[in-house]
Image 1 (tube, rainbow, N blue to C red):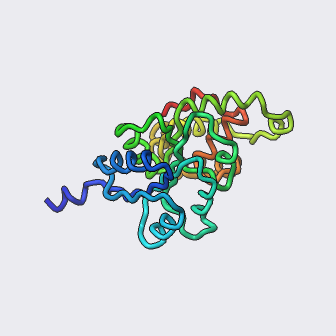
Image 2 (cartoon, rainbow, N blue to C red; image 1 turned 45 degrees about the horizontal axis):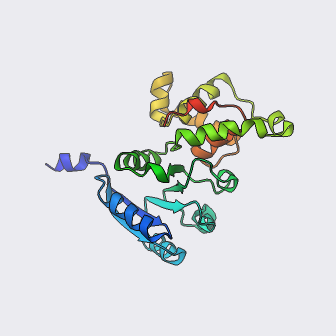
Length: 225
């Protein structure tokens, strides 16, 4: 019995900051019903969120895109939670959400707030994988044509292997999954991912995928989530 309990995945502690009361209550109820979630704390003010995160361990924070104060979760603040998921009102993310160093670890569309999608998003973001709705990836791809010649001229120079890993990264694969797919060691996959993040000047995998799509290094249809 003890071995079975030890094999059970850890359930997540989630904090939600949404100022709209109806949406906040709805998200709280839905998240509380998920088997992967242990505890949900929903707040309407930054003060309460900051105090909650400082006082206890938090696995994921859901933030609404309309809140411009969300940069407090940066590492500069000294208490960034394990993962940050941004709730988008539509698939056209504002530019300030897509620029480092404060890019979220993933995005969820408000219209996609179902138990299945939230469960998948939580599992993937806590595993260090990319969470990006396909409509958002396609919108980013559409912005490539609007980039300036200067931006396109300064694309990162990726090796063939890095390009392979970039596609798998966009599909949400973990380092172990990338290693198995390419038949390389986990250490090798980790090294290539680290190289990609450095070349794309990205603080996390989501930022790397966003940068790659916007610079024309990655087609939007490479994103399958």
